[in-house]
Amino acid sequence: MLTKRVKENVLKDARRHDTDTGSPEAQVALLTRQIEELSTHLRKHKKDFHSRRGLLKMVADRRKQLQYLETKDAKTYQAVIKRLGLKR
Image 1 (cartoon, rainbow, N blue to C red):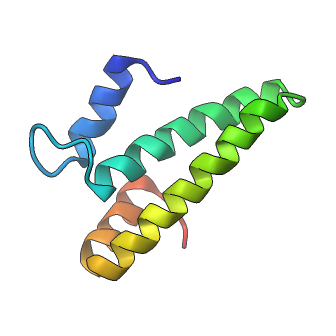
Image 2 (spheres, rainbow, N blue to C red):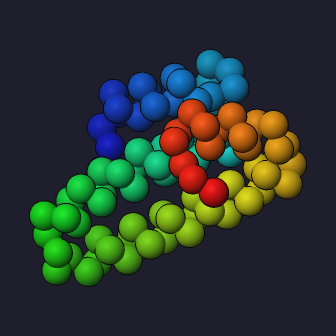
């Protein structure tokens, strides 16, 4: 779970305008941060299958958001991929 301060810092870099929390870019950035944090947790707690399921749902959601962004605006998609360090 991300703290409010961490979410604000992630959104500060990814949002389109000051109150943006729903754009695909912002959602992908938040999901990426949550995935990183949960992956770290699962390295330590290998048998936490409930959290693993949540991680898989987040990865699938991020993949859907990225596919949507790629079809709507390829230039923004490339910028998001590069900024977050994702490979595709």
